[in-house]
Length: 421
Image (cartoon, rainbow, N blue to C red; front, side, top):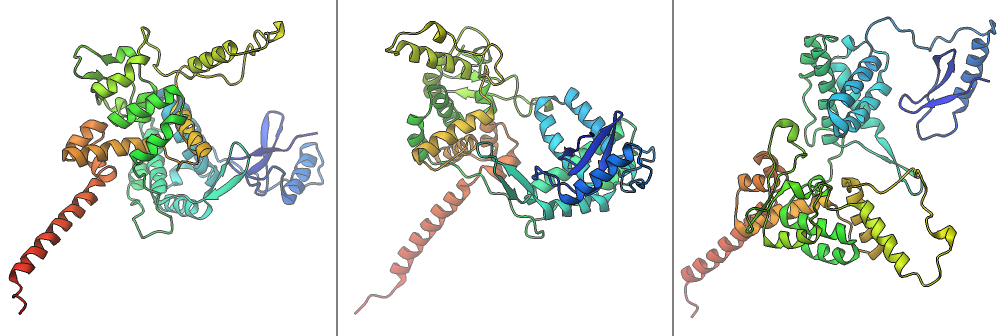
């Protein structure tokens, strides 16, 4: 019996027969485990035809390719190149972009994908949204794509066609035409706005720290002091820290967000940050904060505190080849999940590592009175990015100026008013 399989990206069913994939007419939504009735009926007809039943007419909805380069083939070639050339960080992002585009128009010739089709796809994203599955319960919830997210996706689609122009498989005019599609503007689209990342208060950070493991707590303290990116504090290692100047250590990460643009990143550790770092320094080049070493130390403490005798069968119960094992370094996801779990367990308002970065910028602006260029040097951002995302201190400054002006106005008004008789 030919098996009915589910292609979740295209939201279609398919059957593989003699090393060839045959798609079943009808839509099979990705969140549905069982195929809809119309897909099952079409599947039975397709199986009869593939097994030689001539009474069943050929299915007209099965795609017939013209030999031209389709969106499906273009995206497949790009993903292969992306995985090899752009590294493991860019690939998951581009894969999610490609999945949506392939599901929308898989067999459209690439030469026919122009500005109007890009706008149609953009409107399609606004209408359908997406589903997010919760790992712990398997429950799926529907969300809408934000305006900035859709603009981000549009930009990445242009990137795919730009790559194709460099490979001489798509004309340069096709990429140029896509540049004419303007981004969605604030307040002029049905797409919702993304929630802004706000700084986390020092009080909430202080409440969270006692409930974090030792390495996670040290990472939080470092990020709170220096404004490092979460990925930079996760990959921190001893050889990358220049300790020649005892007054201020310099951390120069080999890998960071803008390394591929030939930009350098420098993080300074003053005395307080040095005190946090010193217990974690090591002689090798491994990351300072290691979940594998933390789990090994935890097991050792549990074994030492055990009051009953260890049976021979309990001396080593570790699996020889586990599917999941603690890594040598924390990832940005595991780092954020550790903080979120501690907050949820103790009833503390949830926050993320990126909010620490924002708080560090605000603290510098409020205490030192620096401008966007100085903050960008601290954070490793462009000044325009610092202005856009990190300069909420302007609100505080405007408030203080307004209060000062009001106080001056009151004094002048009292002096100018005639005495009461």
